[in-house]
Picture 1 (cartoon, rainbow, N blue to C red):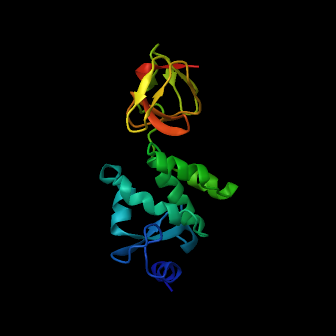
Picture 2: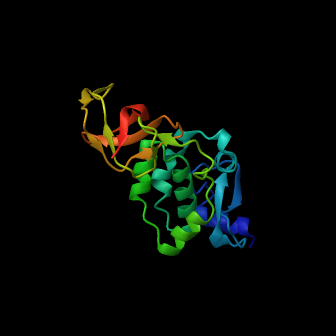
Length: 190
């Protein structure tokens, strides 16, 4: 039995990420030895977005809410990598926070990342020009009205464990229990 036939049987002839049943093919999760255990069955839509970040449709990946709980390590690795790639989305970061991987699966998932390295991305700077990193704590330096949430983020509020976004002028963090986007020009590194 070929790898593709074994994957079709294992996946019940559906994409192991989004459950689509059309245009399926085997996809090796690198680094891979070409075995069934290190491959997944994906649809053309998922495969295109995995291979070309410029064609990423973030809303398509809400499907990872289900597939990240797969018992197949290769599916877990790909779910982790895709969530990592879109971790600037609050819901994706929340899923990443919930995802538990065994140590060997975690090492595999982190072995090859398609996320830009720190050297490649424009640094996010606070109001004083200090470079902000994911996980830092910042202090809000001006009262900010939070549109849509119905409250004001008060000056002096400390926002812990921030998340960087694709936009170097913004960060994400929790204020009053709500995850919001903040402009870095109104923040000071704590």
